[in-house]
Length: 341
Image 1 (cartoon, rainbow, N blue to C red):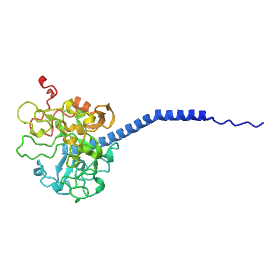
Image 2: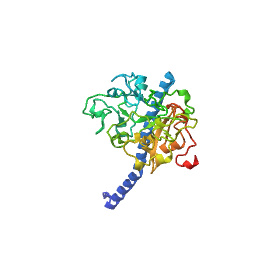
Image 3: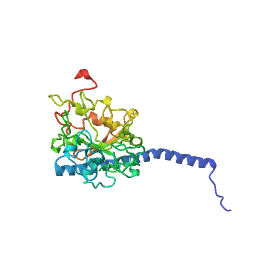
Image 4: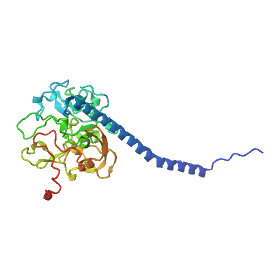
């Protein structure tokens, strides 16, 4: 007598399907978390390479590059100290960014990009003549959009996910115009604790990079973040008095670090602290202040932590190295509790 084949019942099939769905539900978050961790690690490896490039530059020159300077012409890496004033004497020449200086103008493809952010990074402040290099409604420093003339174009990586510590990478304001403070190039020997001093980190991504976008539509990706504020001048750090023996710069208080719900456009010029333009898009952190971010330190190692942790541990330096005058950081002054000072 031939054996009769037994088929699965509908209930048995539903049970199997339910088990598979349950297993998928359990595994997907784990797989998603592993993918995000891998992307964060790739971003960390990329910023480590940036740190190595900076170390190579420093070993040859004994000083750190400027965050950006005004170019002497519309191409090339030549710049003049006398042109580095409060305002660009020739806006059509654009900026020379530290990403270009590090590689002699021949920037490796993707060298300043992170895989976890939109398009790998923010566009150049002055993107040039290629429309695909622009963000929607972006305008350059002279008010042109993507359909305007192809100049100026910055000597900068096409996409930039990373920003420097402005206390190490000075802005271009080197020329003495009679103001109390100006920027100076930073010799590597002045860093007291290179293993505990942040060199560079990741930009905060917003919609079409609006976190770096001014109300006029300029995306200021050429900027370094300024880690300190003045006791009296706040984020207007060049207006802080330079005389006297009391250190005038401090770490921003916790009240100046905005929770994630309060972040928005133009964090690079935020009135609390420009550290609010630092990224928070990796795992870790908390529900109020967002995730962690990769930091590369002056000795070349990379660590991942939250922005708030980096401030609490005072990892941005002991001095405003790139600022003239008394640039020591006052670690005892408590802006959140004035009566304690």
